[in-house]
Image 1 (cartoon, rainbow, N blue to C red):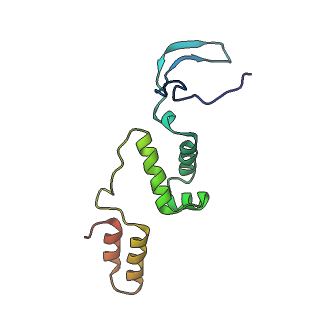
Image 2 (image 1 turned 180 degrees about the horizontal axis):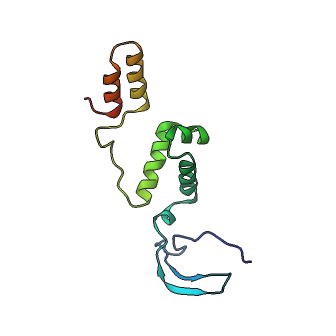
Length: 132
């Protein structure tokens, strides 16, 4: 069996996106030729792919990613945004209903709830970004 290497996504000479022109099955010796796209995931660096694998293994739960990689919430968000952009998508500035709260703002809402300054309904609305 031949060694299997990751497909390079960029040309080592001019750095343009590579295409696949031949696929081969080592089991039955069938070869298919044409022009095949690498797909958006091939645009990611090995480090970004590793992060995506961790993110998926953690079922998209940022708190689990934080713990597994021992990084902060803002770092997780930053890496996700970099990957989204690297794949050619736009990064949204916030949630559909309102702007995302920073971890500090979330803690303040929970502290206000615990001290009785706001009701649980107000806390829910604030955490969802529904109140100004």
